Length: 81
Image (cartoon, rainbow, N blue to C red; front, side, top):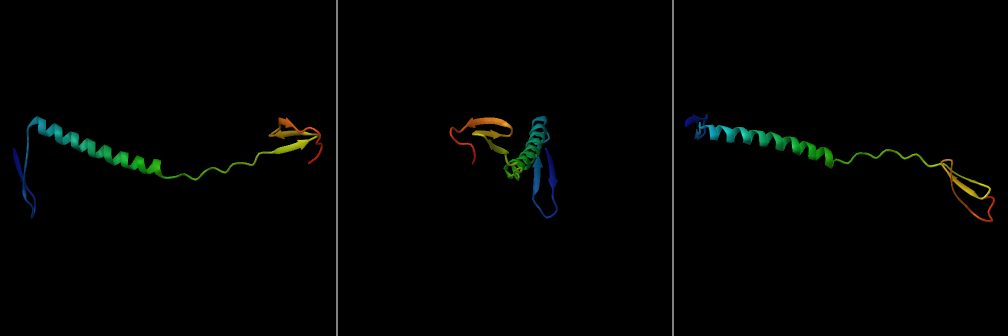
């Protein structure tokens, strides 16, 4: 075991065994991953402004209703709106 002292703080006893070193590395990786996931969560949770939707072109010609140039339906008995 290694003893480290910090300025004005308590003395820490750190394990130097391979298992302890592995745990410390794994903990560091998990902390870094948590930071990345927190950033990703902020990006996902932030609402994006919606794109403006272009108005659809509708036409009524001789009883037929067209939308974007495609026939949608007929209105019987009506020639003009």
